[in-house]
Image (cartoon, rainbow, N blue to C red):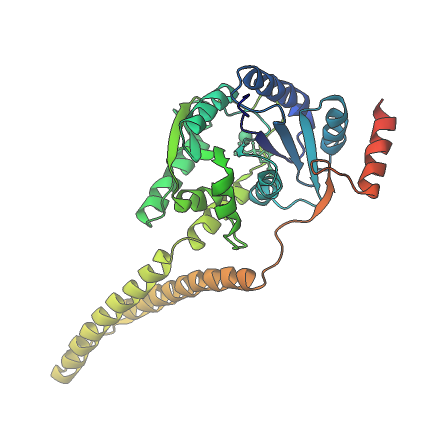
Length: 337
Ligand code: UDP
Ligand code: MG
């Protein structure tokens, strides 16, 4: 009897990636074809491009390609929701129709030749396979140091992260089902996936430069990403301020008693410097502490609302198509044939 092979879906979030799309799609199709040839994956394996509300021609390119190339399919989100959520949308969709799913960025900075190694690990029985960068030579000095600092900080705070692993990974159906049970709105996949705890493996690769287009992660997004990562996983910053508060309280009590004794002994002095310093110091400290607590309250605020994380506009992936979707497909077919 012919043994059936696992169906793989490669999920690729895309935000304004018209410059890289063609090449990415070509290279990934090549990989998928060769894996099918090798019988490592099933014939129904697909590449699912998730358009994260792009403002350029990305979606048109995806739709067009999906007509020409049976391996390519697409999911269009109604508006830009950010990389993590776009990725999640793709994973949620893909898990129903695949045995395993690989996520990768559209710019192919991650080495696609290791997708084969991912599949080998999968066949060995690993449920999650992490792609781990061997070095960050091609990243800018700034990105390298901030990233390293981020990992160090997260580790100190007790958040289990795979060092030098981004969102290039394989997950099998079972681990995706588990992932779907995490309801939080502040998603930080790199922190959540290791928490699932199934049998995992790491595969090393060299990270390349973006071959076209520019990064969609400017400093502001990176900072908010890092902040989300910390506040959705650890209360250590709050603990730190509580501790600091206690220490300061202790010292100010001691100093207060000291000052009182001095006063009784008649050794009073102007004391302006110490007064003004402590006012500024404590004021700053309090504001900082309140700010951090505020961050957590903000996180709670966005969690309790339980808002959906994304809205799907067009889904070319899930057949049978609804009449409206068929219309859209026919429209595109006409337009681009
Ligand atoms: N991305 C997305 N939505 C966004 C920002 C980025 O889907 O709001 C996608 C982007 O198209 C790419 C991936 O996330 O496929 C990673 O982005 P990028 O390569 O710009 O980040 P970097 O590699 O510079 O960290
Ligand atoms: Mg990139």
